[in-house]
Image (tube, rainbow, N blue to C red):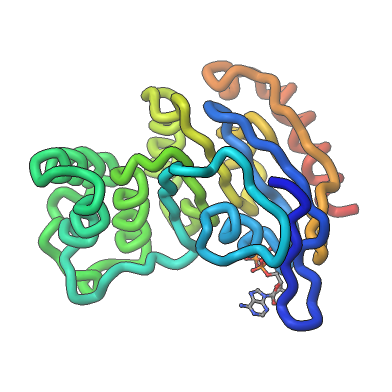
Length: 232
Ligand SMILES: Nc1ncnc2c1ncn2[C@@H]1O[C@H](COP(=O)(O)OP(=O)(O)OP(=O)(O)O)[C@@H](O)[C@H]1O
C-alpha cells in the first residue's frame, strides 16, 4: 500500500500511509477506536476508494471479508447466505461442498435451514465467518471477526487458519482489540495510531505457532510490550 490518503470531509483519516504485507503471514492490526483501521482495510478490500495512493499486487485477487457486523441477507437461510456468495466463483457441486465443509467448521450444520432472525448474535457471526472462509479469497480481511464467540470456537477457528493449509499463498489482515487473540495467531502485529493513521510499532512475533502454548514466558514479554505501546 503506497501513499494512501483518505479524508472524510475535513477529517484526514489516512495521510501518506505505507504498508507492506506478505502472503502466508498473519498480520494483525491493533489500535485505538477511531484511529482509521476499518477505513484502511475497507480501502484494501476495495469496498471504498482511497482519495490518493495505490495498492500493488491486488490486481485480480479475490477478497473474503468478515465485517464487524454480520451483514447476512435476512430473507435467505444460513446455507443460502453462504451459497449466494459462492455462486459467482464455483459450480453448484463445489459450492455445496464448500458450504457443507465450513458450516461444519463453525458448528452450524444443524442450523443450515434457519433464517438469520432465528439465530443468536454469535450464530449470525459464525455464519458470516463460514461465508468468508468458504469463498476462499486470496486475501482474507477480518474486522474483529471473533468478537462475542466463545473461547473454544474462537480457538478452533484460529487453529484452522494456522494449521490446515489455509494460510498458503493467502494474505491476512486481521483487526482485533484482543491482545491474547493477537498473540495466539499473529506473525506481525502492527500497532496503529491516528487519525491520521500511522504505524507506531510493528512487532514480529517470532515464536512458531505450535510453540505458543508452551512458550508462556516469551508470550508474556510480548504481551507487556504490546500493552505498554498501546497505552503510550
Ligand atoms: N463514512 C464515514 N463518514 C465520515 N466519517 C467517517 C466515516 N467512516 C469513518 N469515519 C470517521 O473516521 C475515523 C476513523 O474511523 P474507522 O471506523 O476507520 O476507525 P476504527 O479504527 O476502525 O475504529 P473502531 O476500532 O472503533 O472500529 C473516525 O473518526 C470516524 O468517525
